Image: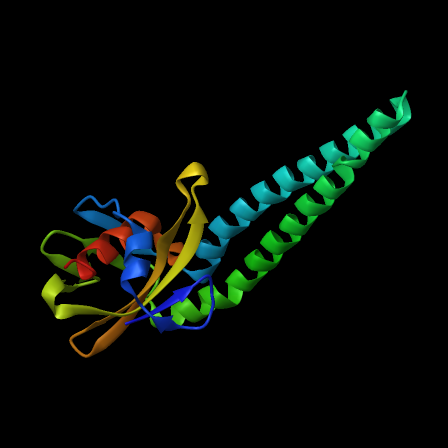
Length: 200
């Protein structure tokens, strides 16, 4: 099985990757519905707008603090203290640009995922017994994971962890891609499926 982490080139899935995923939270049955690319992009767009607002406010705040400290400076310490906020604003701006470029790449990725995923409106259910995609129900033993896509997430003091976001599944001579961004309740559903197909 291959793994794609943060959009990089595919490589073999290792025990270290599984360890980085940790224990996936999964409650069964877990149900979702396949979304269209426009619906998936709508959710991405809302998150991008929130990021833009937060980043914009942080940059504006840094520049405002810099300007106030420089104008009100009574000694050299205050001048130098104010200068600290310029690289901070630059760092936030760089992070903002990286986040914006990442969001821009998602459109083509979702369009590609939609071609291999279930049609919009398809009901997808993960239960203890197996996976149902539309009218097709298969036991977990009949499903194999050909490739896994994931993102490295920062959890602060606990360090980083690998969050699965795309699953390339094979069953009964068919292939289907489950992309969490193209599924209603996608994060929980992909985690539930991943938990079963990776079970020892």
